[in-house]
Image (tube, rainbow, N blue to C red; front, top):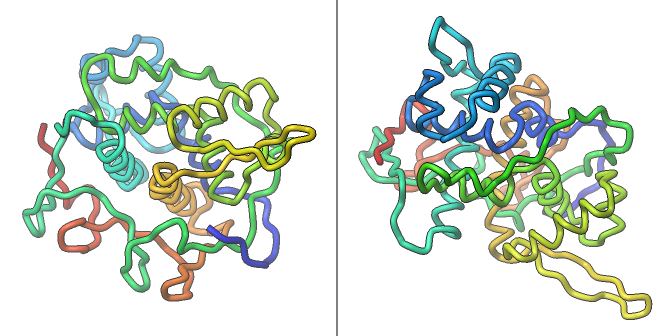
Length: 300
């Protein structure tokens, strides 16, 4: 994405989505509800291999934040939770492309409308072209996070997400599934490249920033290169693998616009292809028609 001039705002829909949803375990609970139709406590435990206390806390938070409702012994998705389908589908698609060496897809998605096996894609709601990171401009960056009230959360052990079985969503969450990694990726798409810039923008402790940047480099999301020798200074830029991750934070931004900021877009995106405001929509990869959770069937 490239920056364009415009008025500053104080909000960020990606950050709003991160804080509303929670950590990787919350994503996995939503994934099982959306893909597998799981609704009971024991069903989530069996599918995820998750501790009772951890699951109880994630379900309570998802209910408190409006994504699920409890009906006696069941936890059912609300309209807000149903609409998280784009985030799940884009995470599935990236995990399948970049993290599965076996060639086997754990879960297949099919479009009821055209009967084709599909993966989720994001297209511009105006021109219906596929959205790529290099084709998007933005009117501002979110303000630096100094002073924002951050909910304390323990970083989950991302290796445990695959404990029960392979999952394309879990594979993506092993990259994006903690707050700081998600926000570093967000900042990278907004053009941040240098250690001091990341630190100033996110108000992140230097030891945590060093660890997260090192990990994103090891995972092939960022590449590290020196831009000055004395004193030694490096910059971090998105690789092709990292750029291809763009639909995940973009779907989070769109979801945050709708549900965290009530339809208001704190950051205005412009699609270069049609030069109009970008409103990303989830579409079928076969027929390019818009799709929602009701239009998709999943099979193992």
